[in-house]
Length: 405
Ligand SMILES: [Zn+2]
Image 1 (cartoon, protein in one colour):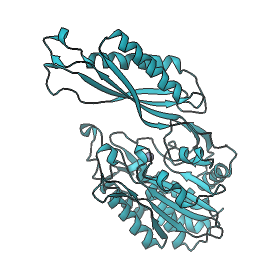
Image 2 (cartoon, rainbow, N blue to C red):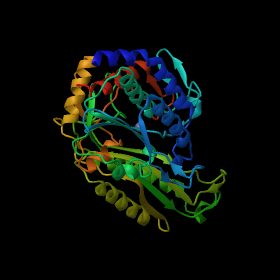
Image 3 (cartoon, helix red, strand yellow):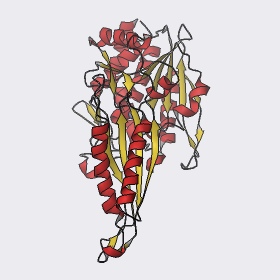
Image 4 (cartoon, protein in one colour):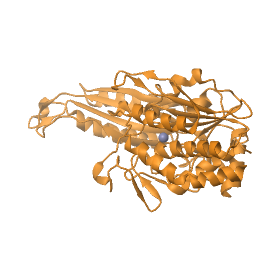
């Protein structure tokens, strides 16, 4: 039976590539980053699921920022011999394209070239959308009766914290503790990494308030931008020295603290900015508490307020996910994934940790052992993001094999 299903996966590969390209074209940038489009992308996926013959349910979360007023979340099921379910959980939304001049093609016009599909969201999380649908369709068309029920979820809002996506639907879905939960949203290029642990995440916002003034009269102003730059450098150094532990389970094996977004300040060159707002993306090893990171930043902010009389430095967090306890490398989901990867791809996959921010953290925080796995070159959030057709098809084979073995 497995052989028939795997053959059908190969036969359907160009359909799956076409589907991935349609998904990319249906631009779905998260509204928190000024986008929209999850709704239309969800409609596309829903109609594919229905034409395959799966039962489909929608649980939408209200959100007045988007034209439809809701954020869609799709739950589809293919009944197996048992109620026990293999959940394959993907996300609908993407991050924005980033700097357009760095792209060689239009990020929202997918291009298939040399076995790769290029476009924003190709890898993150389009490949998973296409590979999970491919696995389900091959299973149905080969007439396979899987031992486990297959549950497919396509949720909104993953890139901005999942409050209107997986978090919103979590209690309504009815996950069971012995279900197998697989999140195809991180991995490595040969498919040998099964992610079982993630770092804690915190996005720090630093708002510096000084006094706006004419650039020729700095003694009458207080340049918030200068203070902001110095603050960023001070924090950059402090974080790296204070939180320097290494943990070989992770790649990279240390905590990371990156100054990222900087808000636009004055519109003209000859005004001294009175406000400066900058952000740090922090990925912190589970051996540290995220509160320690916030407290360290607050202590520096206090020092800056003393050094620059009249300045105010506010520290806040715009996203926070404390690192949940890792999934055991001996858990059923890891063992069964390893077996399916070995059997269909001949790869010995090993459990490891990453910088995090996937759905698995939401499951692990509630005591569900979740594994993150797919085969990717890790081009997510970068210019010229792509998904390899070979990876899409190979991943679908693994997803189809798990409930059949
Ligand atoms: Zn993702």
